[in-house]
Length: 119
Image: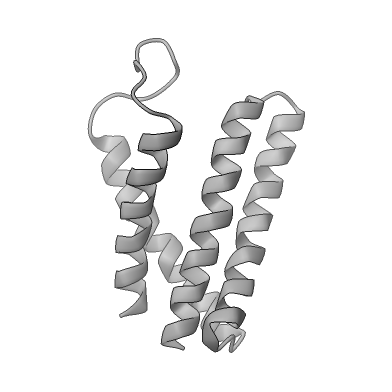
């Protein structure tokens, strides 16, 4: 049940977060893919992410909101470190790093809290 709810939360959060942080920008020449494939893949990845956070929370027996949130925050920090490395080598801009880091820190913490609640 937590995986399903987590996937839905991730999709809704992502839609709201990116609509405010990225806004409407033209996809011509900015490196973004066009078409619905990116949205379909994003939904699939949201459920996969929820599944893996659930596995970590349950494997580490992180019952409760605080324990689950701590695991989720740790996962978000690991993902953020990967983006930081890419930013240091100039693979992504500082603005893109800030957007991605904020997104992953918040959503993985929320997923951890959610899975800790269902633990």
